[in-house]
Amino acid sequence: FNTPSLLNIEVTAPYMHAGRFHTLQEVLNHYNTDFHYTANLDPNLQAIQKGRLSQQDMDDMIAFLKTLTDYEFLSNPAFTKP
Image (cartoon, rainbow, N blue to C red):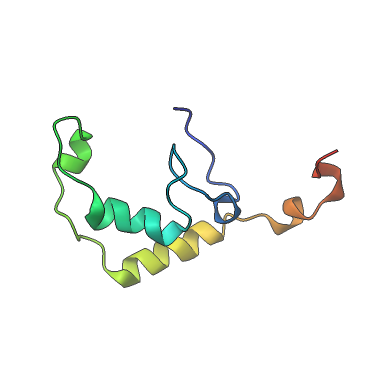
C-alpha cells in the first residue's frame, strides 16, 4: 500500500486500507487496544503492550493531527472538482 500524506487527515475518512474506520478515534483505539497478536503482525506491534495510550494521549494526538488540516487549501476554488 502507498503511505498517504497526513495533510488534511481530519477530512479524509474513511481510514485504513479498506476504509473500515470512520473516525481518527477509531483508528487510535485499534492501534492501542483492538489489534490482535498474530503471526504476521508487524514486529513493532508485537513488542508493545496493549493499552499503552491514555485517552488524554489519544485526544492530544488527534488534536495534533487536526493541526495538519489546511482549510485554505480545502476552500480554494482552484482545487475543486471540475
